[in-house]
Amino acid sequence: MNPAAAPPHSSSAATRPQRRWRALRGFLGRMAAGLVRLLGATWRVEVLGENPVGPGKTPVAGALWHRGLFIAAHFFRDQRIVVMVSRSRDGDWIESVLSGLGFARSPRGSSSRGGASALRRQVELVRAGHSAALLCDGPRGPARVAKAGVVALARAAGVPVQPVGLSARPCLHFGSWDTTLLPLPFARVVAVFGRPIPIRAEMTAEELEQTRLEIEREIERATREADERLGL
Image 1 (cartoon, helix red, strand yellow):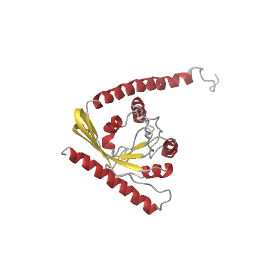
Image 2 (cartoon, helix red, strand yellow):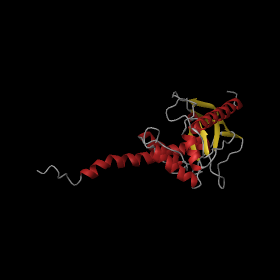
Image 3 (tube, helix red, strand yellow):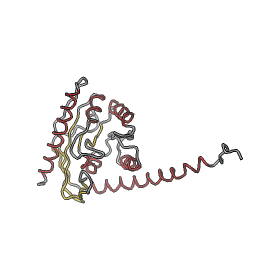
Image 4 (cartoon, rainbow, N blue to C red):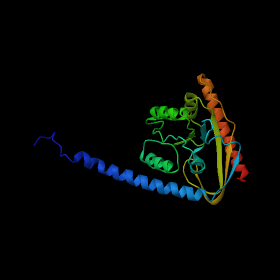
C-alpha cells in the first residue's frame, strides 16, 4: 500500500471536531451575551465625566483595568468597539461573547502570540473610525500595572488614550489575579471617565515610559473615585 495515499475522508474527519467546537462556541457565546444583557439591564449606572464613545464621536483608545471586564462588556455594548482577543480557546469563547454584545470583530493576538499582526489590524480599525478598548493590566497581570500596548496603539492610530475607572456594589469577586467584578442584579455601577491623555507620534523611550505611567496613574485615580462613590 502506498503510504502517501491517505484516505480521501481523512482531512474532513480531522476538521469535524473543530466544526463542532465552533458551533458550540457560537451558541454558548450568544447565550452568555444574552445573559450579560439581561443582567446589565437591571444595573443602576452612574457616569462621571464625559463618555467619548458613541456615534459621530472621534475614536479613542479606552484604557481600563481587567477587573472591570464584565461591566465594560455591557457598558460599551453595540458601539462596534475593537478589542484584541488572545489566540486560545478562551479567546475563541470571549470573541463569541463580544460579537453577541455588538463589539467589532476582534483582532486575535497577545503579547506571547500574534500580538504584532493583531495590533496592526486594531490600528487599521481605529483609523477607520472604531474606538478601541484595552484591559491594560491583562491578560495575566500584575494587577493595576499598565502595559505599553495602549501607548503603542494610540500612537500608531493617532488617537488619545481615555482612562476609565469602573466599580460596582454589590458584586461577586472572582478569586483570580485581578479580583474580577461581576455586579449582582440591581447593583449600583459607577463609570468614571478620567482625563484624556494625548499621545504624540514622536517620543523617546523615556517619554513613552512616562506616558505609560501617566496612563496607569489616571486609570487608578478614576478607579478609586468609582470605588469611593460606592463607599468602598
